[in-house]
Image (cartoon, rainbow, N blue to C red; front, side, top):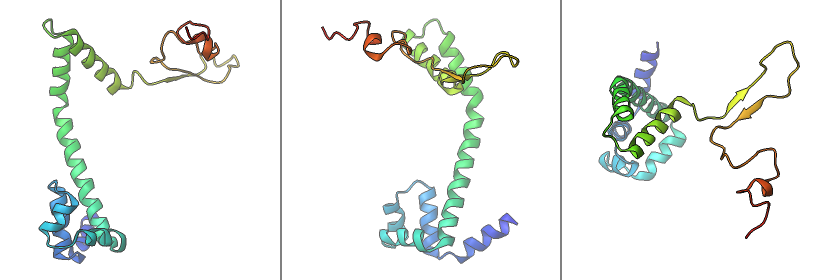
Length: 158
């Protein structure tokens, strides 16, 4: 059923509209796409606002393109992981490069994001959840007033 809806949307579009969408999906800018289709650039924006079929078909094409790219990226995941493993464990890889790779892995897995910590014993009433941010600078104590915790200078600006 989705396919028949898609075909009916495509069939109601004008040749210029399908040309613009095709050019955009090939990577053209709006200016380039409208020039290739021999329509004014402002016409594209009029279509977006006033032609629901054009807007729907453009969105469908974008979604299809994004799904295709995600599938291609998933296909590269094994190679990417092997490359990261090689960089992280390679003896002749510069430490700065290894650090950057390690941070990318940690960020990608969400390991550097603040973590919500809840109850550890369901029988004991607990205070509200605590959010731990592992990226918080170590010289700052969140329980001290800011002027005391800033670089340990107790608010003095010397």
